[in-house]
Length: 183
Length: 85
Ligand SMILES: [Zn+2]
Image 1 (cartoon, each protein chain N blue to C red):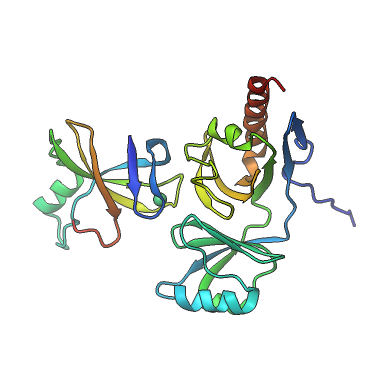
Image 2: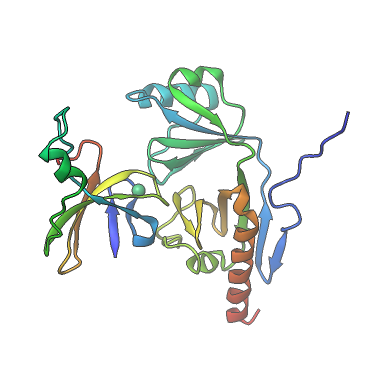
């Protein structure tokens, strides 16, 4: 029987390194979207806390532990990144496996905010968008989930089918930011 | 133009999709003038209007946005679920 080799959504597109900026691909475990059943937000939060040590995130926020991250992902919607979801969560929420649906990019380095400022209609400066803050928005014309993961680092989740476009847009913006800096 | 999404905060217009006038759905089971108005007849006011928008590139929620078609001022937005028609 043929041995199939899984390929990453951004294989061959990254890494991109320009001056102090880098664009790389993250490789997580499972991605699962959670939608609480109506009125079950509290029970789901308690079950998540018990099973994964994660609190239910407020809008525009994420929560995390060492091996797992829970990102607010829209109205009554969050994305569990890392572990396989505990089966008990199904009692309180609709769970959907999204593991192969998204490309996960990490944009990092001095000037990362300036790159995003060219592409995303949300203020991502640290004064407005702190580590752990997240937003659903646009990057160019593509829908994304954007999360600040550190002082100079962002996680960008985009539709897998848009991986090439996202990398292209980001690379152009990285180049122009680097050029303006004279790097 | 910026729309104050009750969930995400104030966001750029390009994240939203315009859907149409926010009208109360007729309760009649039978076809009648109420359904004609609901489906086809619009006021097209010069002034304050209420329309449905979806925060399509944001949280995905459906909103009722109140705005003024003369001044272009956006006066407010609420979740369509539970909005007073
Ligand atoms: Zn929103």
